[in-house]
Amino acid sequence: STKLCVCYHEHLFLFPPFLRFNFMTQEYLKACEEHKTKKPERTEYEDWMLEEEKKLEAESVESVERKEKEREEKKEKETNDIAKEWAKREFFRKSMAGEIADITEEEFIESIWDRALFEGDLKWRILNGFAADEKEELEDFKEKQEKKKQAMLERAKASLDELLDEDEKKDE
Picture 1 (tube, rainbow, N blue to C red):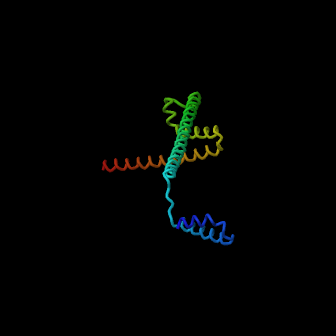
Picture 2 (cartoon, one colour; picture 1 turned 90 degrees about the vertical axis):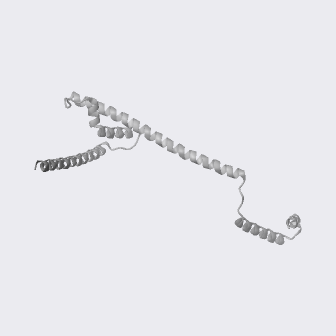
C-alpha cells in the first residue's frame, strides 16, 4: 500500500491537474483525520525541553518571590531605622523642653514606637517617591490611636470593675 502510494506520488505529475488536486485534497483530509485520532508521541528531546521549561519557570517564580521578600525586608529595615532616628530626635526635643522627667531614652522610644513606625513609613514612602499626604495620614493615625486608647481604657475599666466586684464579694 505504501509502495503503491509512493509510486502514485512519483507519477502524480502524469495525471491531469484536476485529478492531482482531488488526490491531494483527499490525502490531506485523510492525514488530518489521522492526526486527530492518533496521539503524536513525544521524543526524548521534547520531554527534556518540557522538564527544562518547568524548571526555568519554577526558578523564575522563586526568584521573583525572593526579590519581593528582600525588597520587603529592606523596606522594613529602612523604616525601622528612620523610626528609631525620629524617636531619638523626639526624645531629645521633649527632654530639652523639659516635658520628660524620670524616663530613659529606651523607655520613651518604646512608649511612642507606634507613632515612630508611622513616621518612619511615611518618610520612607516620601523618600522613595510614593505619594503621601502627610497631614491627612497623620490625622488618620491620631484618630486610630485615640480609638485604641479608648478601647484600652474601657477594657481596663471593665477589668478593674470586675476586680472590685470580686473584692466586695470576698468581704461579704
